[in-house]
Image 1 (spheres, helix red, strand yellow):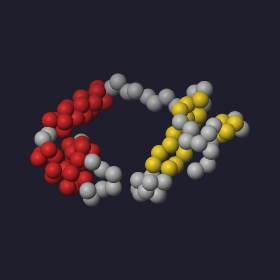
Image 2: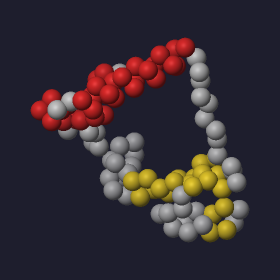
Image 3: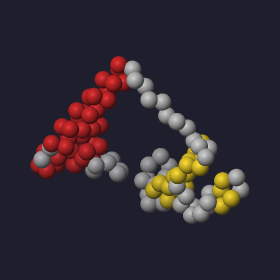
Length: 105
């Protein structure tokens, strides 16, 4: 993993954060998907951006639906989670929770 630079200055190993609303640095671990190697650390450098926050009616409806599904997922007992855990094992890095949400959304 290369040591990142900002305007020619070395930032150090595993730099994280945003500098002057210009560049954002992060470290992530490969999970074996999307061309990454499982367990390998990757140093990413991205241009800074501010994501949009749409307040449209469809977006608000989706957020409400998502929130309701999270509440329902957290109510599940360990026994109710088991089928989701089994199906999650078919996907690298997936948990019962992400499996549940994937199926509900």
